[in-house]
Amino acid sequence: APFDVATGRCKRLKVILHPKGVIAGQPFRRPPIVEMRDDGDNPIPWVRNVIKVRLEPTNAQAKLTGCREENEDTPNTNVDGTATFFGCIVNCDPESSMVCLGQDLYRLRFEMSSCDGKDLTIATGNTEYYTNYFTVSREANQIRVKSGSLPTTMNAGLMPIQPRIEYW
Image (cartoon, rainbow, N blue to C red; front, side, top):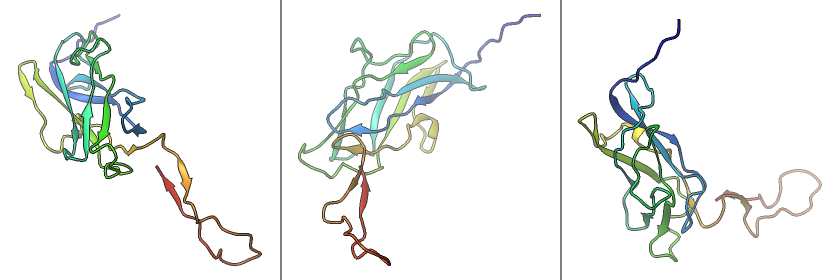
């Protein structure tokens, strides 16, 4: 016989779409999405909670801006319990600085002040409230052969100049 499965009480947030390939000064190509979940890891529908986001680590070299709903509102969970963060941008500060580029040191941290009356402010080490680490680059991620490192023609043995490849 058919039956209904009821979701449990809201318990936590879960990141369901992580950013990657972030280009400094441009909106994320994949907007981050988080979802409210119950104890059984089921999505919680229709709870309009404001979800805050920030860039970690917080430092003077990189700043997060944008991260709004499509209508420019602060992201709230929608009818299916998810929140999508459109227009997130990471800028290097100062803009000419390259200190924030090419490092897998950044991730987004999400907070929600209420979930069935529980405070879901982040507890250190709870990985489900964070995105995966990502790199900020000056242009689309690509593999580059560094100039001056291209090998010359050779017959056998070790290359006199080893190629140097970097991923940005």
